[in-house]
Image 1 (spheres, rainbow, N blue to C red):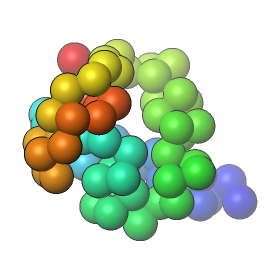
Image 2 (tube, rainbow, N blue to C red; image 1 turned 90 degrees about the horizontal axis):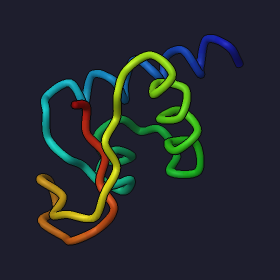
Image 3 (cartoon, one colour; image 1 turned 90 degrees about the vertical axis):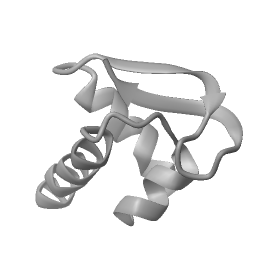
Length: 71
C-alpha cells in the first residue's frame, strides 16, 4: 500500500506541476487515482507544498467547480 500512496502522490504532483487549476474529476481522469483518494493525497502533498483550493473554472473541463493548484 505504501508504494501505491507514494505513486499517487507523484502522479498528482506531476499533474498539478503544470500550473493549471484542476477539479477532482479531472485530476482523477489525468492520473487514474480514484476520486475517493485524491483529497487525502492532496492533504498529504500540502504538508510540503502550498496548494490553493477555491471555486473557479477547471482548466481542463471548463466547468466551475472547486479546483486545486500549486502556488
